[in-house]
Length: 267
Ligand SMILES: Nc1ncnc2c1ncn2[C@@H]1O[C@H](COP(=O)(O)OP(=O)(O)OP(=O)(O)O)[C@@H](O)[C@H]1O
Image 1 (spheres, helix red, strand yellow):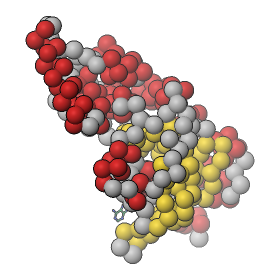
Image 2 (tube, helix red, strand yellow; image 1 turned 90 degrees about the vertical axis):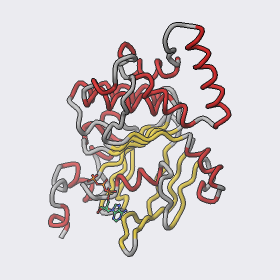
Image 3 (cartoon, helix red, strand yellow; image 1 turned 90 degrees about the horizontal axis):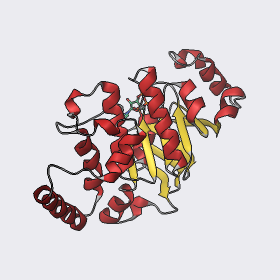
Image 4 (cartoon, protein in one colour; image 1 turned 45 degrees about the horizontal axis):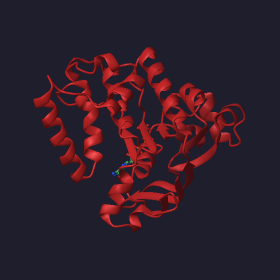
């Protein structure tokens, strides 16, 4: 899928949160959105995942404006996008079931019913529950294949976040939208997730992520977009943006000057 922001804006009441954003994410491409706290990164991601409608401009999926479609058609487009939030939200069940549920929710009702029938038959004909291959494959990618039958409540925060990622991946989305997926993780869990993102890219998934970690953005992105006060200041290949930023504000941010008090520094 090619997702393209075309002069997209988002505002609530009189407050403008995003202005004139133009950005595209293609298949097999990792694009990171960086910027200080409050810049509008999460809002941009919510527009990409079709949770919000732009208040001006367009966010197109393969050339189509999903907000011009019927609800059912838009839902079908949304099913092709997987979102992972900063906090893993798993429920009390096995790891495999937590991963599998993402796929089930995304299936149309007819296929869900067929799957339910198959699982019932499996329970009667074999011993114990069966595990979906796609769920196992996604768990393999985040290094948790052997943990498929563990209770999700027993996982560490880092493992839970890896399961959340596997859940999104198991739906085989065209686009993965990740909101600061490693911000609470230790270096080992971060490295595992970064490798999984890389492998998702190799399989042709597009990835759009927000991160506070500039080293991470430099490590894993094809392109980086720098957002400041709702405006996309600069977008370009990761290496170029970090080593040779074109805008002085980007230069200040990548040097670390804009992290804590951008208003004062910009005054
Ligand atoms: N629904 C809303 N109503 C009013 N203001 C909002 C709404 N959503 C976001 N904002 C405001 O828009 C700005 C951008 O928020 P957003 O969460 O997108 O930023 P962010 O870059 O993701 O920040 P952080 O890095 O701290 O998560 C903030 O000032 C926030 O308070």
